[in-house]
Length: 138
Image (cartoon, rainbow, N blue to C red; front, side, top):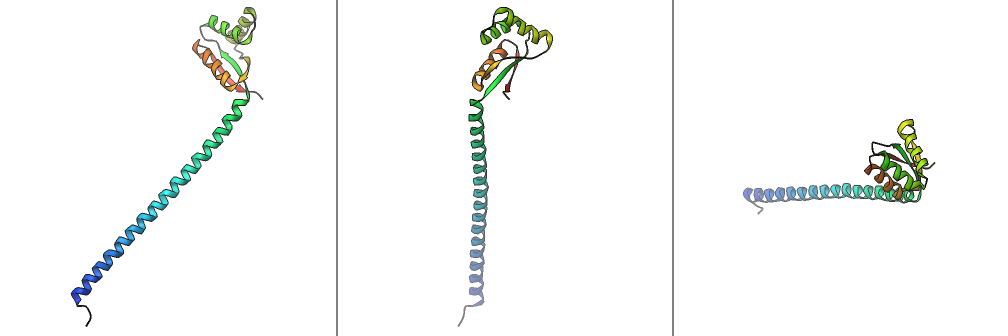
């Protein structure tokens, strides 16, 4: 004789509970797989961006850049001293460069340097209140 109605009902309930558990487990695994795929794509994309950035930076470090004095600011004497130091020109020529920028509103190229040196020079001009731009040599 087969199972009674009550036994069949209990077995059916156990079977449906087991199916629900399997569905949840499969759903969880699918979500985990999708999340892993998204994270892996993001990591690969970030890695690609970092490699491009490193390549660009290595290329930039080897190139020359013009340091262009665009605004003298109010500390004219300190700027003249800095121009003189960087260019190796005399006091008269350095003052002329600074005056051309200050009164002539025409930016003047101070020199051509590697990127790290150009950045240091820019920082030194900023400390004395001048404005400098760094432009790639074409």
